[in-house]
Length: 69
Image (cartoon, helix red, strand yellow):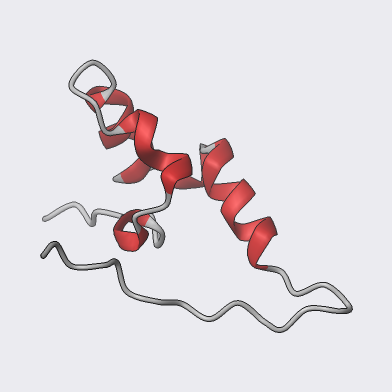
């Protein structure tokens, strides 16, 4: 039976808070967290909390990553 892979929903967001994971030295950690145990990732929870609307803010609207020129 094929194992289901759970990817972080923020993986394709180009969020700078995730940038330090996407280096060659941190690649094993990136696979462990971003492609499996993202609920154990502190950055994942920071992003989720930042998306919660406060009483005086508009709700977060997801935008696509900028495309290179």
